[in-house]
Length: 431
Figure 1 (cartoon, helix red, strand yellow):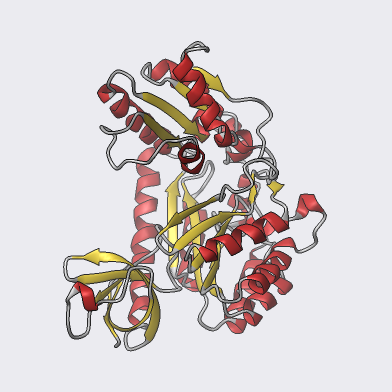
Figure 2: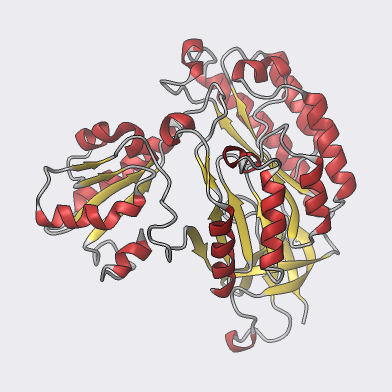
């Protein structure tokens, strides 16, 4: 959206007070995220000055556009999740006053960007030397708790060549870390008739940008991490030994109620195979606690599984009741206090595991991608940490602390790890 607006003559500013257009890209996945989106819109609407436009975009507006208009009267425009490419048209129509306000711009069905339109627009989120590159949008899975198919529609893969062209362009812009994302990256290419599409795409990306330092895979679906994908990761050192695979639970009965893959033998076998093939593998996963019908025995099975598998990173959510999903008929029978107590027990267990795993890094040398400064410390991430969700490496510069003599933000530098916390590492920059 920013690129399209800049092309139309606008320029980005750092303060909402300076802006003539305010765009909030909302989330509508769970109740807490919806309320956060409403809160941000409400704050901006209250401070909006005459002539400013406030536009709500993203998942919340795709699913609850009319409710957004009713709850936040100061919103001028509403833009659906797959129609961000129409932002200039929306702004022009609002400026001309040719449409009733707020302007509803949520054509159905949702669509991906026509790759022939806006062919110079980079469909990636770039921050520093890292970028998220979306390879598909939507999801064809039938998880009972999930509203994504209601918001995004079924999975639609982007054509491989456009992804490759974009990857090359990102490398030319100085990106050193490429994070491949979709609601389910392991489903990439299914709708294009590509068997094992993610593995094929990764091979092609590494061929066209062999000098890209890091390639990271996010959001893999259990059961779809194939032997070929593992082999591609092993053969291409650019592809980080890191996998984000949300498992959601560990008890087969809970997983069946979730309409999730319930073959825990596959999980054990595949993770064991990956760890054998990729000895430095770091794994992130996510679990839901308090799902309808979850018994204490089922939750204890989850704790036992986490203790046995020793994941590097674990995220957790307390079950959020979502109208319209398949789990709606189950209600929300687990008391709030039980959910909170189980969440606390799970996270306390993972904190101790994470601390032990991090302590094992002390004395090792890791390549770290520098992202900023914090007082006298450099801040960055190793291959073990995905941007924004995992931990950081806090680095004591060796020798002079003069900014002129420190490595530039975006550099990939060797760091000797000297300390460990539950989520972060500490280290010293090696000259």
